[in-house]
Length: 541
Image 1 (spheres, helix red, strand yellow):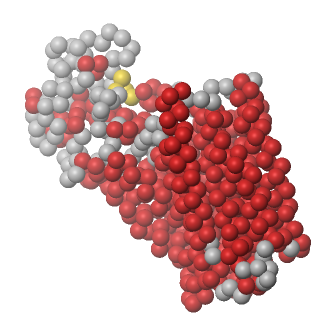
Image 2 (cartoon, rainbow, N blue to C red; image 1 turned 30 degrees about the horizontal axis):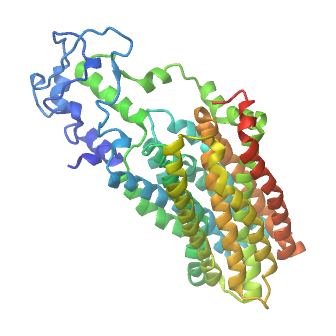
Image 3 (cartoon, helix red, strand yellow; image 1 turned 180 degrees about the vertical axis):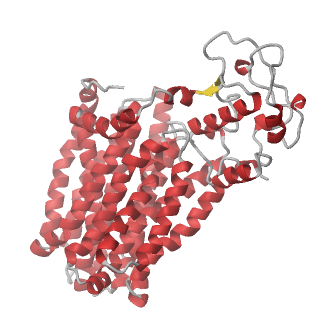
């Protein structure tokens, strides 16, 4: 069997069912020698021969060289990479294996984000069946967004525990997500639908919470933003894919078909992840290596660094890092507070489009439900343009600059956001004031494209800026930022339609544009004074 299966969920299952006889790791094969720092003395100690024979399919322990020398310093017995080019180190994986991870996480993210907005096309039919109004119907979208905002507080810290790792969270939660999507499609009451929508969002959240962290496990800091931008594009395109896929299905097959599509997408992608997605967490890979070496040698002094670090970890410590710490940093550092606010603004206004489109294209331009869904394809266009511009900036300017001058302050990575912050309100004004019969519908979609493109650029820059500001608290800051974005987006979903109905699309977009204009000064201030603010913080890295 191919070696790349070892670290997948399928590989773990095969090893468990065969008693580790198949898919052996290097240390389980004949001829393996322990690295010098793991050897104990010149005379072999007692080895667990039965364990060795089982792990090696009957191979005699004498065929495996496990030389040991005296341990003279604290680093002896610390299980790490066998060499700089150790193939088990995710940073040393082949290009195709790394891209396999990036592409699968992209599909995963598109599916989970898309499930939130698949519901939009079904709102009308759901309102008729359950006899509820527009606001209760919109709550189905809002509560799903809240679910995947709260999820990172639970699943983020769980993924940092080496025993679970990333796959130990991805695989079971995505399976539960798929099952919930099936149940949601047949639920026969409104209260049950809301509960299931929240749970669907909750179990969709791991990919949104630490998908970027999985990519960071594979690439060095120099090239990381290039690959993370691909994942960010998937996160932006996912919500737009929902109406695009569900519009015609709901028109011809009924409102429940829009909900079924989440299960139809989730099932095959879960199978793909179960079969081929490897574990990317170095802590988890090394913990599993230490477990195998202890089993082979009978020595309990062999430990990975993560085991030593986790030994003193308490529940209260995990809770503090995940929930209290990001709030504390945000309150004490205005730069992080503004960055989180601007991300939430971009995210929330992006979701407000799902309500605006229904008020613009069917009544003004006569679009049916399917055609309204197709209009969301502009998001895909904006994402392609955004990824292209951002990566050209990275490859042509920023990466050569880092190689020449070294890594500068995190604020240096905000330059694209300066331009996008100016373009953002322009897009709002163009969309809001061209939505009338006398102006072709493509003009308003161009305005919407500018909004999404600007949102993407600003979002990507700040998504990189936040962890670089406080690397030690990166996971906690991401989780806190995700919660803030989700809560603001949920609020936007609920207030967007009443605002647009009561004051009109043009004035409503003007209000959003006015907020965005105010944020221009904030983005420039963050770029100019962010380093000085951070230097005064007690959390400076």
